[in-house]
Image (spheres, rainbow, N blue to C red):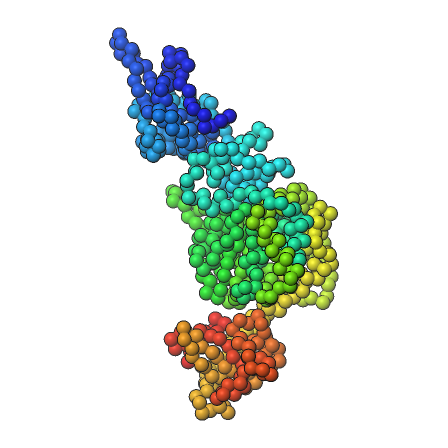
Length: 590
């Protein structure tokens, strides 16, 4: 059926008037009325229309796609709610298309009554990604159903056997609607490579990080199955300085889902916007960029609750106190050059990948260049290959996951908390249960060791983050109690620290760790906190992971710095705010 074909006039005006109560002539509606002995023909409109589809949306206020044809021959497709199919509301819509209805409300009802007898039912697919109700995967312009990809027609309809679906983002009625701009980027782009080649290039370009990313992606594509079984879903956190390849890495995964690969800056979005965005897709990926220590408290709360699938709950204007939830139903990837150390509960919910290198081998560069070229053309074929394994994944997930949990509990060399054990088992499960179905480019034992190593690094980092905060809390408390002394230019033999103020609200804090250590121990004992030996404390506060530490550029000095006046010390960057400095979220009043 050509939905943009002209609407013909009535073949027989008398028969149409008798059977339907109106007739079409010259692209207008007319009605014949008997007045005493005269028969009067009355013009009702300067347009005619067809109800193309009745769009079922699960509410009493369903929608309809209507073709409007002006008497001059212009055609338009509009999308209206049932509540708008009454004279005043409908007239407003008509006028936007230079059309008008001249008749009464009763006459409009007669026309709609006749047209509704011929309309076809279609189901609105307003959520992108996996549709559990209809057992299909939804793109903005197509659906993947029973191993077939079906594309929309010119007005946004897809027919799948006896069912019809409507995709509003590519509906002709919304052709100029900017509200669907983001959705339209979530369209299917097949590309020219499959899973095996894509995964192999990722491994060549990113090594172990590539393997973990592939497994996280598969978990995200089947997130509904995973969450149903374990009731949690971790995040991927990419940690590293600018230029280490974090954004490019994420793009190689986002390209499977269309061209929406830019990501969303965390610090430019409200928690409400984050929740709403993350609820618009199911079994997909979202990328939130630039996590910092200044990330909004509510955004941090969103991250905490999203781990358990909960998003934001808001009130709805009604008399029965109804609420609307925005659950998180996709995998989330975050990045940043600062760790979420102010809330270790956030870091414990993440799988951390540390991006340290800014220089890459020729093999890595070649693989990345090829991968980026393929991503520009789309990687939808890779996604469909993964989606085709859904039944196998669903059938074997629970058993595969439990086997890894049991294996981890038998191992004695690691003392991971339960949440970390769960994340390790979760990451390994896709490889185990789909090993025969997908061509993974790595050895199972190698990736197992890489995930364990990565988990150990993250576990130590969480412990270190806590230790760093405790050290600066001890420093602040000791200075407040006048137990430690600031350098004044003369007291170098007795001073414990020095501050060099810089521009733009920054300062450099110089410390003599050996002389501060006894006061750190004293603070820990007074507050019943476990303390580290001096060597371990030094290693932690001067590690690469601590972005506040300023390593020395002086040759032969290691991590220490020799100041002309203060002597040998360790240096840390901190913020200067009025009469206090801030380091590791600890305020130290000067």
